[in-house]
Length: 400
Image 1 (cartoon, rainbow, N blue to C red):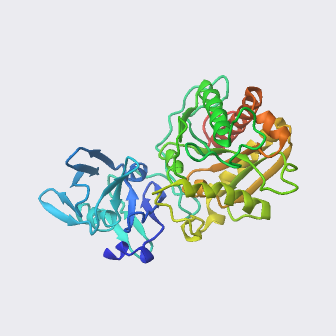
Image 2 (image 1 turned 90 degrees about the vertical axis):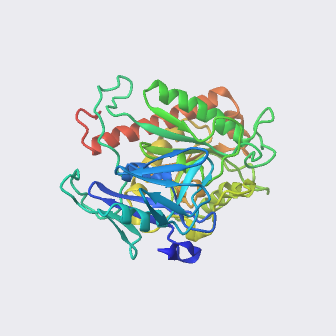
Image 3 (image 1 turned 180 degrees about the vertical axis):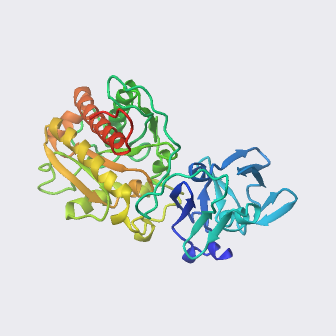
């Protein structure tokens, strides 16, 4: 399926369809050819990979595919499969050429079929295939392994193991906006405030029995493209933390308050401004692989996508909490095209915790007490969402 090598014809995403459900997987063309991150194939296919200095071995359904980074072939037993492009490693992640799924897997494992027209890898039903009821809709969904019911957590009432990804915005050479930190005290910048709140939030969630993955744990720059991949496989949701600001002008210091965003087309001029400001961080990335044109935003059929609805609910629950504790007030739930949310194939929101360009907001965010209140409010919103998630998935004994 060598058409996949032509960027103009390569899909922006594919679908893995098995008897257990369907999963959307993004496709990247950062190296000039269509490729898929191997870790994103673990949940839908059970694919594993082991890398050594000289060889990479990818295993699927007991079949091993031996490859070398930079060599466009895979060895399967005594046979070879032409990958048409080279596997490569970027950001400590193995990327497989799309022909691995469209050509090699169906050749080696006949129960898989590649649907070129739909951009789908389909697993045929066999006598040994585990069946689960199909959802009522044909919209692609992300499938997790069957959860193990735990005793109710006495602090939260939750009965499942949950994983939350926290993204402290900006970092490293990217201080955030405005560059001078606005009214934030003691020479702090947006990147410092977001990191402080994220660390407090992480501790609060861990204390409540919720596992946490951080996109960054130091003052370093993580590309907008890479951040969402922290939330994969068993991850339940993604929360990106930021500090708002207004451009220079007579009314720069007037805007105040908190707002929470989820991914969709911006409905207001101000939402477009915020998205442009946060997406502008891509200029600090030398080789992010990110195509920032609108065609790369994963918005196809978003109105029917369950992830959109869940993101909107998560945003509402978090905003209710942070709006109640922020001195600047509640600016409500908004929607806009944020690059950092566009690849998060889980419910994902971005919280603007206040304005660095407003004296009151900035002084509040610059204190440990203010950061503690914001983190606690976000934690309460997350837990409320997870409780509702367990109720909707009919977990026995879920908190009411």
